Image (cartoon, rainbow, N blue to C red; front, side, top):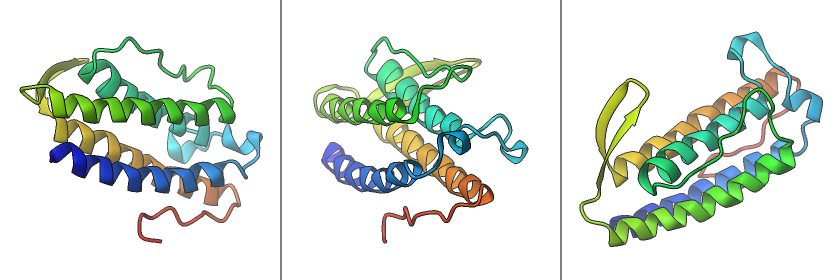
Amino acid sequence: MQAELMKQQYELIKGSRAVLLDYCGTISPENLSRIKPSFGPGSISYLLGHISNCYLFWIAETCLKREVTYIDYQQLPSFPEQRKLFVFIDQMMYEFFTWIDNERPISIQFNAGEFEGKASALELFTHATTHEFHHKGQILTLSRQLGYTPADTDIMR
């Protein structure tokens, strides 16, 4: 039951992400990689990579115990390559939903740097997806600062 609700929610998230990625496809490569000091080291490309890395760490590596290759912030991939990574993330998320249905107990132990803890599948899902929405907002704000008019990426649009 829990996995089914998360799948439904993830479909909504994917729809919002598709609008964001289509919108990012209209931004010039120069502006995708342009760093604005108000966003720390971040550019739009950096933020997309950061979103991907969060899913890779929490879902693929920590939960599913997959060996993953993270986005290198020093050599960010092209936008089409980053977009393909989200296809992989979608596949991994559906594997995660299957894992939820089949694994017991639905709680993992993790060590993220200096922080150690325990989390449920719902907490991991919520963390990764709200993290994406947080940075999606930054991407839209950053694009506005670069002179673009952001797309409406809300779930209810």
